[in-house]
Amino acid sequence: MKIEKGLIVPLGYGKYFRSDSIVGIEPIEEGRGPGKRTKVYIEHLDAPMIASRSESAILGDLVDLPKEITKNREQQQLLSDMLDTLSEINPLLRSIIRDQGHWDLDQLERRIQDVLQDDAE
Image (tube, rainbow, N blue to C red; front, top):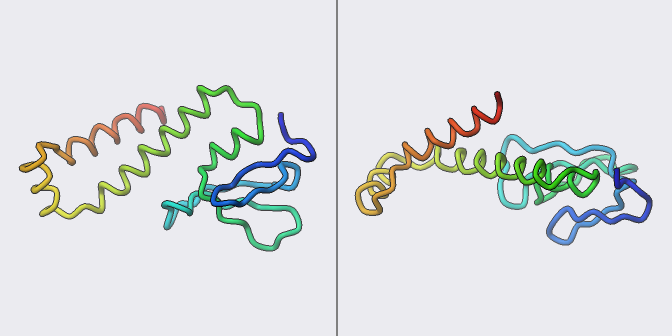
C-alpha cells in the first residue's frame, strides 16, 4: 500500500490531500458527471469533498493496484457514464444521428450493456 504520511493525492481541479488523511471514498451515483465523480471523506472534515476524478483513479493513487485493474475499472466507469448519457438522448435526435451520421445509438447502448454485463459476471 502507498498510504503514507506526506504522499499527496490529487482529487482534481486543484484539490489535493495527504493520503494518510483520506478515510474513505464513495462513487457519486446520482448527479454524477464532469467535476462530480467521487465523494472523498477526509479526516477532521464534517462533509466529504467532491472530487472530479473517479473512485478507481483515486484508489489507484492510494494503493498499489496493478495498472490493468485500475485501467479496467476506469474503462467500465467510462462505459457506464456513456450509457447514462446515451439514455438521455431523445428519439428525434437519435433518428437524426442514425440517418445523417449512420450511427445507431440503440445498437451502441446494447453493446455497452453487454460489455458491462459480461464484466459483472
